[in-house]
Length: 128
Image 1 (tube, rainbow, N blue to C red):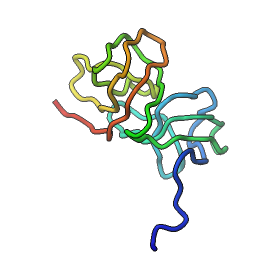
Image 2: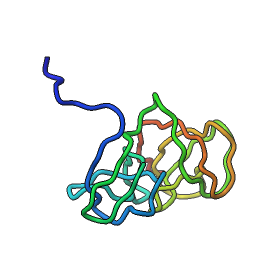
Image 3: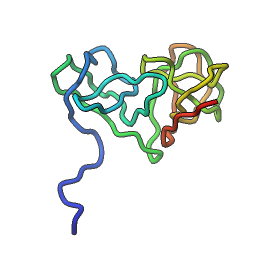
Image 4: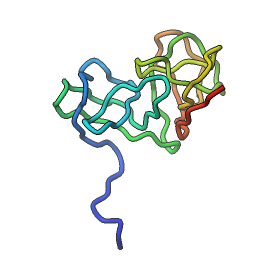
């Protein structure tokens, strides 16, 4: 069997930037560690416990098998596609932006600042 030493569930990893206040935010893995994504990046993790740059934090790999809660910018209704909101690791509904990264589907209606229930999808960058 070649699938030895693999993990499921939360992982520990070094933070490339200060993520000490980034709990529940989406992040990406870079060559130097975890960091908040830009609007055109592909996030694959959720911060469970952030840490200072160079320190180890706890992260949950995104999977459509498990919903997550992420801070919402603006409002949404259940079933809407959610995209990255600038570089904060939060989500929002698709708006008039030219390009965006889809990250999930809202599983409940939400208001600004709420930790909205999201079903992750494989993130994809859309150029319009």
